Length: 374
Image (cartoon, rainbow, N blue to C red; front, side, top):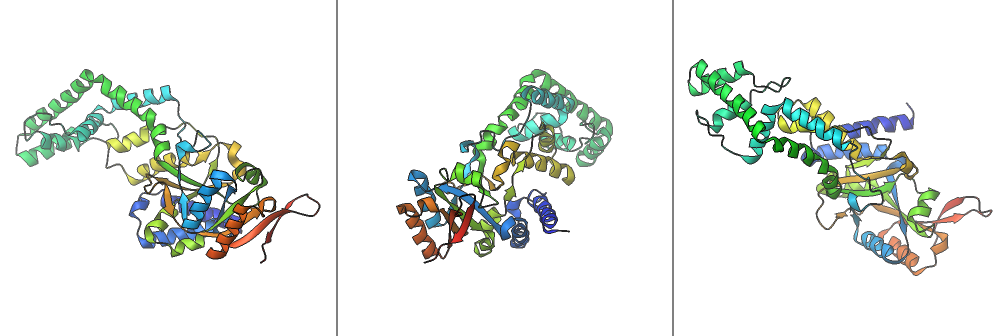
């Protein structure tokens, strides 16, 4: 197995773990250490990633503040230049119909879900909601209907009533479910349509720090470094080892962007999980992974950026993730004598970062990167 194949194998293991059953928020220090060491080996250039920046005006002021104070400014997805960032691909009409059909084919699960949200007492006998809850725990996973034999047996055991009385109660619950959906058809429609706002909400709660796996991409110098008159920051993930646990735990949420056309997304698997909290791990894992992979997928038109990103949700602290992991600054020779470039050079000397100059070769056919000497 060559180096590239080994990295791909490790990267698959990385995704399997951070997009796995156990949420990253519940990772222990041992979990984080394992993920971090694997991630460092996945990232090209010995665990280093790069960000291209302008050296002029307000953009430089923001970048310099982050560099000098040691933080990464995480942008919410709805502010990025790709207005399809962190979205799910779906057909609205098809999705609403699919969800509504699922609700009506699983009415007991839906009503159970609604009552769990609203905590309403349905007003039947036998300790009311407690008995209702017992019946609702006996939903058959395949059919979505109440398993009457199990439910009746449980009611008999819990409330010491006759089997016939228990069956009668189950019939009342079934009638109640049918009646509720008939009288409140708008609930199913509203529930289905509410999921169509997911992209809008997802973009607002998704925080992204974009980097590239290479420092010598001419297209990136042109697009993000003010038409080649800028600089590039090198981030070294080996330095993450020296950070506090909480910051490490956030930084292992670093993933490589997928460049591909998205297939149509179905909301049904995630709704199924919401309806049934006891769904098996494999099904839950598959639904979560499908969602997350769509959120880090971009059109192939962006492929030249070779992007890796830190992907977080609901970040506090004014979008700032304090993580001083810079190891070098690369400055284009065309701006090396500017005031801002000199500020960068002085900061590098204070921080112990290396400095490289990007310059054309003597015949002007390609760029070279040379160490700045004192």
